[in-house]
Structures are given as structure tokens and as C-alpha cells.
Length: 391
Image (cartoon, rainbow, N blue to C red; front, side, top):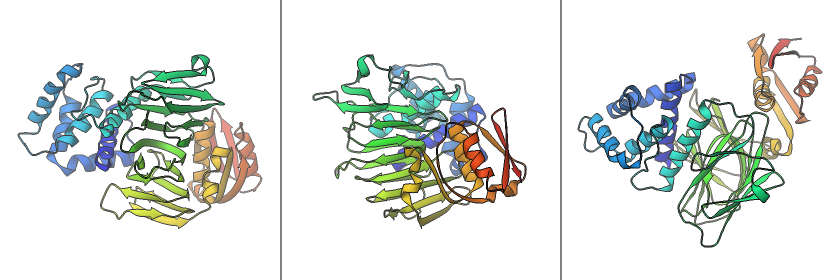
């Protein structure tokens, strides 16, 4: 799974580079991958700089032969890497679906993540959406399904009090399919997966997960923030793939804050135990309750510290709780919830430490007024741009 996740991330980077929207850290990651081997450079050139015609599943062998020619005769290349990355990019670039040779759940996950990236890359998501394995996009609201229920591949989907619930039917199809949920800024979504795991997805986030959860593992891919209450199953590890590491559990409650655009990602354990499995040669980390591991991708530093875990996950109960947090982190949270842009008149203001425990108001002016009452900063809001000024 660790290798499969790398391929997902590589495909995302190549696709975002094609769109011209790579961040500085993403560009560095792509450059590092390209410089690590000639095969990587060949694959990149083959898929990005040559004209590729649309194709269906029957043409996958032609594609594979093309990739093999690009490898300059290196017969011992890692075939799974090539097929995984190529398949992801193929979907992203609109080549169409061609199934990977062994059709493992990891490979299907790669294709689904790539499909979601393609669907949402050129459109603004206004409402929370469910993306099926077919690429069909459904807005999630109480009137989504006729009678509140629909069925996908032998799995019943039901909206109940705003929560999307999956339930396996006896004798359902065993084919491993994946669905995805995408939340816009300012909205959250709860989903109960087919194994009973309860997930709270925060604003501006994407999650991809197995529809039936019948495989040997329970892999999900997350870009954003989510809180998980995982149903215990000692024979089927639950795995959360984020940038740079993998969170693996059997049954526990934890929060993952891993937006790909942020240079720091964090995993916080509420109860149980989780293992953090890094992509590189770093030693795996086992977290105990009320511990948080953070990875600073800019300086490649990992830190484990004691925290108040319930404060970290307070967003799922409609509250903002910050303890001695820099203003920059607080305003980044506000930007995602209230769909605003933040600018600073003085960069030093970003380091101002604040402690807050407030309701998640519907109007951004409410929390800004509370912060202004500290007599340390002023805020100017115009055309959805907040300018932070020295008071």
C-alpha cells in the first residue's frame, strides 16, 4: 500500500503540473522524483509531451508496449510502478479507463483518486458531492436519493439526518469499487462506511474509500481533514493514506489534518493506538492517546507531542478551539470555513499566539470581532478578502 500511495501522489503532481497549479513544495517533490531515475523522466516525457488518443480497455496492451519502448529496453523495471502511475495519469488526462493487470484494491483506489482529481480540477464545488466509481457526481442533500435510499453494486446508500450511510446487502457483488466525497469550503459531511466506521469530513476536503469494505484491508485516501471512529476488526487493518505517510489502525478514534497545500500535516490520537508509516526510511511511530505527530514537509522534521486531543477534533461539534496557536494557523482555518482569502499588512502578525474556544459562527465577522477585542490586531473585510492589520 505504501508503494501504491506513492504512485497516487506522483500522478497528482504530474497532473497538477500539467495544469500549471503546482505549489513550491509540490514542484520540489516532482523534481525530486524526476531526478531519482531515468525511467521516471522517460515516463513523464512519454505521458506529458506526446499526443495521446482516447482509448478503451481493449487498447491497454498498446499503451503498455508504448511505455516499455519509453523505458529504453530496461526489462527489469518495476512494472507495478509504471502501470500504477501511468493508469492514474491516463484517467486524469482523459485517456479513459483501462484496468490495471491484477485489479487489486490498491490499484482501483489509484484510479478512483485520479478520477476525482480530474472531475474537480476545473470546477468550483459549491455543495458536498458524492463521486461514484463510474465518475457520476451526485450532490449530497436530503433529497439526493428517491425515498432516501439508493443501491450501488449491492451496497445500500441512505441519507439519514444528513449522514450518508453504507450498508452491505447479503449476497452482494464482491467487486471492489470506491466512492469519494468532496466538501467545499464552509461545509462538513458525515459518512458511515460499510464496516460501521464513522467519518467526519471537514471543509475543503476529499476522501476516497471502498464501497463494500470486503477486501483484506480497508484503505482510504484523504486530502484535507477528517475525524475517524474506526470499527474494530483485527483481521482487516484500516489505512488512511495522506501525503508522506500512512496511518494504520485496527479500531480507534483519531483526527487527521493533511491538506496537500499545507506544509505541515498532523495526526492526533483520541483513543486506541495507531501506527504512522512514513514513505521514506524514517522509523514508524506508534501513537498513544492524546499524542500528536506532525510532519513539516519543508524542513522534513517529524515531531511527537502531548496535546488535548478533544480540542483538536472540536470542529466536528461546531467549535473552534485553539490553544496558543499562531494567528496564521487560526486564519487558515477561518479561510477554509468562511471561504475567504487572508492577507497580512505585516508578516510578523502571523506569529501572534492566541487561545480561543468559540462557536463556529455562520458569519466570519463574529470570530473576527472576538479576536479584535484583544486589542492586538484589526481586520478589514472587503470582497471576501480579509486584511490583517496592526492595532
